Image 1 (cartoon, each protein chain N blue to C red):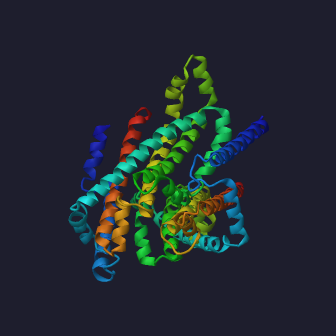
Image 2 (spheres, chains in turn green, orange):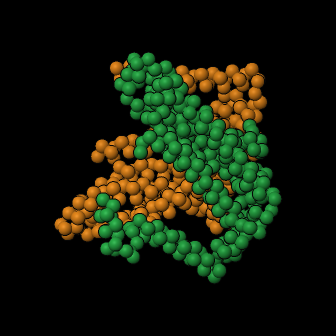
Image 3 (tube, rainbow over the protein chains, first blue to last red):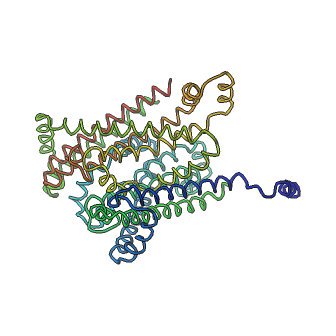
Length: 266
Length: 251
């Protein structure tokens, strides 16, 4: 088998594989976009509204990381997102299991959760500010209410897919409720659960950022608004890229956890 | 069996509503909560009636719905068009799909101040913001749908002399429709929520602006009246969208 592969390789040595051609074209496209924005930023763009990528990278170090207040703001946003996310995972899992466990829960409460999930939560933001003030509490609370719904919905949806045969089978073999949760429900809802966890991460971030943009005295959202109002686009886009990096990083964490929990699948 | 379970589900749901309403009534009459945070139910009800009677709901609602419609229309056209171009070859799909998905994982909300800079605080910035947010789920789902269409359908359509538009209209689009529909649904609610969000964050007009204004003026009854109104609108829109979706799926 390996001899065959080696032979196939020796016949076409210098050509790129299809996969690496895809990857390099993708990198080329991203580079081309960057070059386009560089030229656009240096020639046509209004310097009050847009900066070329090179200026943004410079601003990242000179105006964003160099300032202690902004470093603190990045850290605060990160902490708020983490706390809100952990809360939504814990409470979302608990509430989802509670509702998904029983038939009346699935039939009666699940539609209510779906209905609540479809309401655009941002209209409640002014109310959240009245209740929680303008400190970190309102941002954590708003991130939490954004994050908990996709987790609940996906946990319940995952539990609905478990065959009743498996449940009655495991019960008749003497499994306790915890055993059923651990060995029947959990493995079955892993794909759906992690889809929910990833969506929850995006939405928690959205909730926190919305809170910071609306009223806040610190955090990444506050400073992006500030830089935009000052017509200072370079640090604005630099901060946006910091948050984008944070979003990708947090997504990767969830992805790694998913891989760890689905190892038995491969 | 199914009917009884539906009936009992209804009873639980009505009981849930009744408990929520009862809790609201109990908390506000015993005075355990500041009326600034949770005004009594009758005050919200009278505020709702006043707003309805004076016709104050309609101008902002009209502006917001027009904004949503424009944003959604742009999102559909650009999303489907980009997805169509990207899925012209498997290679292009593999190059571009992760790029689009990657951009979508960034909270676009953070660009909201940039939209305000470019388009001002009028409805135009909300149209652009809602369209940008709605574009991604529509494009990603359409890419998924179109790239899953069986190659044999396309080849046979072409061998029978169909033009590329004919192929799109009669083969690609219908075959990919269920997946595209999911994207259209998600895109609609994302556009809806982002337009409202944009109006709440920074705007001169619209529903979101009125909600933020009621909160800033410390008029909780009016704030709740607006929230009730938006929630009802969301439920109505949700029902309409699911009705359309069910009918299209049957078809």
